[in-house]
Length: 173
Image (cartoon, rainbow, N blue to C red; front, top):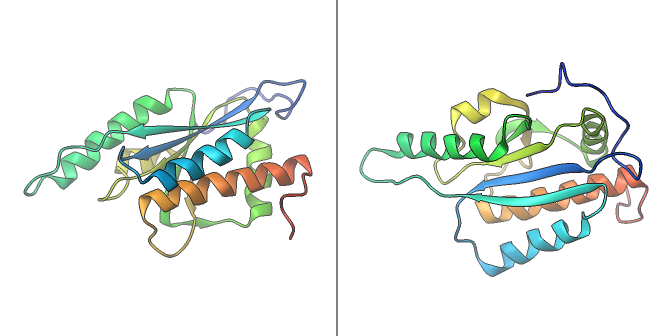
């Protein structure tokens, strides 16, 4: 759901409902620093913009079945996103956004009244089904990042963008 037919509402804020941003990430066994980093930024986003981490179980991998594992992860990711969510595929080949561009995009999306699902694939990438349904293919970096680090970088980038929207002093251009 990319919001083309969704009713517009006021931006997230004291008068409107919270903007729910879910970070859907394949994999469940991350180092403690990853969990702590994501939790720190999620805790800061508790008001009119909220961030939740949803870990997606990895598909079973064996000799020659990585494609099926990725498909399975994608099915679970789409189910976790829910039917109303607008999907954002985190991809190395996606669109690079400045903090200000991300803030403008989030602010515009907040007016559509849909939750957002930011999808991070597993060790063999993101499922084509998720990529195809995405409203945005977002690149955090042209580097390939470890999945745990991508979680923390995405959480920080979302927090920083929200701080720009709210006029908080966290971001200093």
